[in-house]
Every structure is written in C-alpha cells, then in structure tokens.
Length: 271
Ligand SMILES: Nc1ncnc2c1ncn2[C@@H]1O[C@H](COP(=O)(O)OP(=O)(O)OP(=O)(O)O)[C@@H](O)[C@H]1O
Ligand SMILES: [Mg+2]
Image (cartoon, rainbow, N blue to C red; front, top):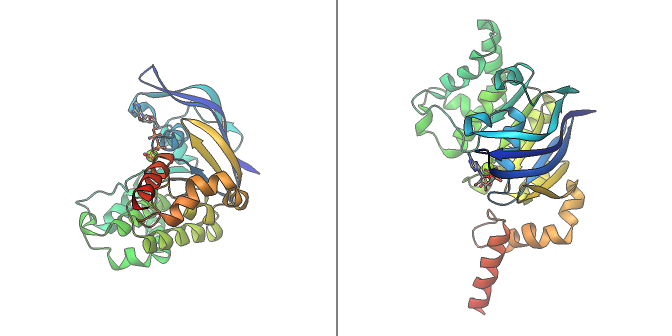
C-alpha cells in the first residue's frame, strides 16, 4: 500500500525561483525509499514540500499534489502533519546544543501531549535503539560527536512515535563506520517499529544498500527511478555515482557530476 504519494509537484522559492519541476514519487507503507542526487538537486526541497516546511523559506508548492494515507496533505500545517505521524529530521542534525542529550529527546515528546509514563516509555524505547545516547544522556548535546548528534536528531523524531520519517542527509560529514551504524539503526527502526523512511542522500552507495527503491533527482527533476538493486546495477548510476565513489580519494562521500569531472581532471594530471 502507498503511504506517501507525491504527484507532479512544482516548487517555487520567492515567487520566481523554480526549483522542482514535475517531481513524482511514492513511498510504500513500511518502505525505505532513497531520494538521491548531487548538491542542489532539490532533495531537501522535496522533503520540505512533504513536511510543509517550505513556507518558512518563502517556498511554495505551486503545482501538483501530495497525499498521505490517501488524504491530500499539501495544505496542512507542519504540526498537523506531525500529529498524523510524519516527521522530518533536518539536514545538519539540529540538536539544541545547550540542552543535554536526554533533554533534547524529551523535546520530541513535548508536542504530542504524552503522559509522564508514556514519555518514559518512549525514552527507553529510543535508548534501546541508540545505546550510545543512553551513555551520553547527561552530556550537553553540543559537546557530543557528529554521529551522536545525528542519532540524537533521529531519536528525538522517534519520541513522537512517527509512522513516517523524512530523513535529510544522515551521512553528512560523518565517518563511514558511523554512517553504517546509523543506517543499521534506520533499518532496525524500519523493520521493528514499522517506520517508513524517505531518505535524502548524496551518499548513493550507502543509501542504495539500505533502501528498497530509489529516485535520482537532477536540477529539480526525477531523471531515473527503480528498485535499489536495479539502480546499483545501472551503468549510468555506476559511472556517475557509484564508480566515482569507489575510486574517490576521500572515501566515496562525494558523488556529483561535478565531482566526476574534477576526479577525471585529477586522474589526467596524475597520468
Ligand atoms: N530558501 C531558498 N530560496 C531560494 N532558493 C533556494 C532556497 N532553498 C534552496 N534553494 C535552491 O533550490 C535548489 C535545490 O536546493 P535543495 O536544498 O533542495 O537541494 P539538495 O538536493 O538538498 O542539495 P544538498 O545536497 O546540497 O543538500 C538549489 O539550487 C538551491 O540553491
Ligand atoms: Mg539538502
């Protein structure tokens, strides 16, 4: 069954800057769907269109429609969406730096009117998935590692017991081993808590290992989509994203066409 359906949307910032054109995508119930693409392709904009956070950036969905569980949701407030179980984890792991890890997690429960007992239970559930957060619960979030802050941001979203999480670039700036740890937890949350994920990532290689389906965005359009397995095997994807990543000097974190070009220049120079 389709949980989220984005149909042919167009997004304009500041009344004139056309950023998304005719973007369509589906997330099945219980799925992990990857939204891939280079810098500026429109991944974050797509997630914000779904979570209705575009207005804060003077952006607007000007065409198309978004449905969640069959209901039209592109006119709802972000709060109403959270109430229905859709939560976005923003790019750049936004934690409250001056609060402790546990206080950060508790802010995630605040909006959904839980009792003390329910909050406690939600907290223990989050700690069960993120043992590192339990160890660091009393630490000020601003002093924890990048990986712990990303976990804290995802954990905070989980406090509200969402059905769907829009996860924006969880791998950003993190060491490969930590990225792997975070994606393993995402998979766990997907399988055991039945949370569906729409996952924006520049790290194509990792995302396609954990997702079941992927969409590739370029300049605000979907240029390719398919099962994760078929995208991993696709020659263009391999060349432009995976191939480079495998050879890339900095461990495969960069994966845009621009990086392909600079990589080739580097190679020529070395030869
Ligand atoms: N508030 C805004 N006002 C005007 N233009 C914007 C705004 N936010 C984003 N853009 C533009 O929209 C395009 C898509 O940006 P977006 O952040 O969605 O890309 P992205 O795929 O998430 O990139 P990244 O991988 O760097 O996070 C870019 O050209 C960007 O400059
Ligand atoms: Mg982004």
